[in-house]
Image (cartoon, rainbow, N blue to C red; front, side, top):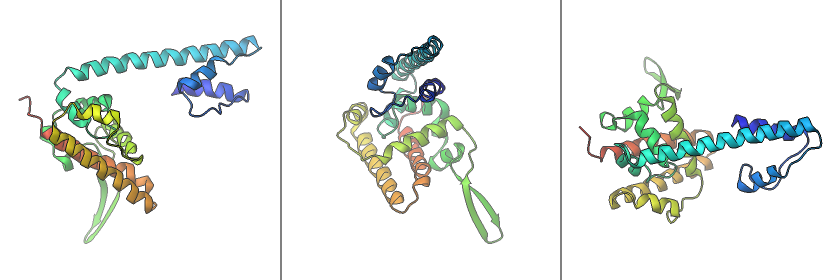
Length: 225
């Protein structure tokens, strides 16, 4: 992100703005390659910023490939495949959650939410009980992965998409059915809260449901012990 920021802001200072659609795509990269400057120093700065961005992307892709390879042949592979039946949880996200949480058998859905800091804070006095924001305790990385996954349920759900079909082919029919039901439920909740003007709370609420659904799927995988 920092490499992208430096490159885009260098162009912005020269009054150059990309208007060809979404940035950081193949088309955008071709547009970047066409940028040239008469000032030698400015051209050198641009080339250095672009090379730095290319190096970061190449390193990221190599790490992604290595992680995907480990996820396909490890003790977490059955968990990753089952978590992938839920929209927003790709191989990298599923492997990250499986590795961060470890033994899911020791936690149920409610306890997993508390373990990840996604339960609300509570301020009680006598008969008065007030709930606040989430505690944000526990594993920050796993919580961020779940919240990012929850954002995917904002878009219309298409069970016929090639991505979901490819993931469902790796799991039993019962897991596919539960994944489809969970995806529909999460998208419907997003629409309901969005209609009520509560868009800001939807990602966290969907992330909590994802936690429960993921814990349920993990519990169906026999323990290694």
